[in-house]
Image (cartoon, rainbow, N blue to C red):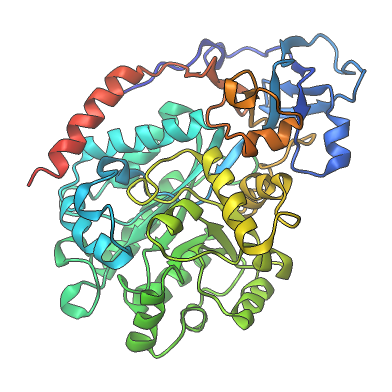
Length: 469
């Protein structure tokens, strides 16, 4: 399915700056001083896709000849950044056999269905996942794709095309599974690959697609799936390749007690010790979940600069536990937010995930510590840090013009007083406008150029076929 790009992307001409003016409130994720500096909105350079100016209360832009966008009905925030997902899993949401089981049996039951994945089904699944993210105010998405059964050798290439069609930024991580059932791993043999194939394809993808520097749209990371699905050798070799190619590393770690037990039995190590033994304990690494770390491990992760993607809905759905996000951040470890796969969430709405993070972290640490601003900071500035993106996650001069606007007109917001807090406390779930790199990708709550009805019809048919065996 090919989307029609908005006309503003095809003119090839310099465009006038755009003043997004007079929002109800602005959350810049860069601190209260910056919020005040942007009280009357900001100016976007639509030619370079960056922020030119923050406009204080009562002032007009110093930038001349601006077009104006009336934001007086909206709360303005940076585009949200999703740090962990499995796009293909939108095809197996709320599947009966795994509705009420924890992680390991959940995986064992789903592997046979996922092994039936086709290129067309992956294209549909990826588009649905990214579209749902975009509608929730997300402008950058990281995906962890580790499933390469026969015929799916070009899975990441398919995802690159889908991201480009939607106009989103993407960190697409080339995952892998190399430890099958016959060697003591969890996945069936038809879902694992040989090490040489994994490493060769990883290098191909980085060399073909990985963009560097500010404004990058497509980036590639390397991401062996988990301690229970890859060999120690592929973890070490992948770390060495990532260092050689200067790309980031990602994996699941410390998600469940079962995983901790597996690591001790298989490798004789706890998960963080295992991570260090294979050369992953450094600032180029970010981890999904990170629930079952002890106090010493939290300090070691922070000292090494390893970041953690907090995935609260999935952790609650599978009863895996609660990430010690406040302690990780207080120790100095970067914390971001991820929706995780849409078969364990079972959605791809990042704004709802932020709300979930706030609520579950309050349950653990108290309301005074876990403010809406702190958790929104995880989903913007913190998440961007996990992906190594210093140009994203805040609304500041020189940053990429990635932003979202949310109306407070719905009945759920009636009677609310603090606009930024209302986004989380009252449950905002859909952005009205979303901009990526100076270009509107969502307008009036609709994705520009996307035939949603046709997409969902095809996606539902593919989902039915996948589990019909």
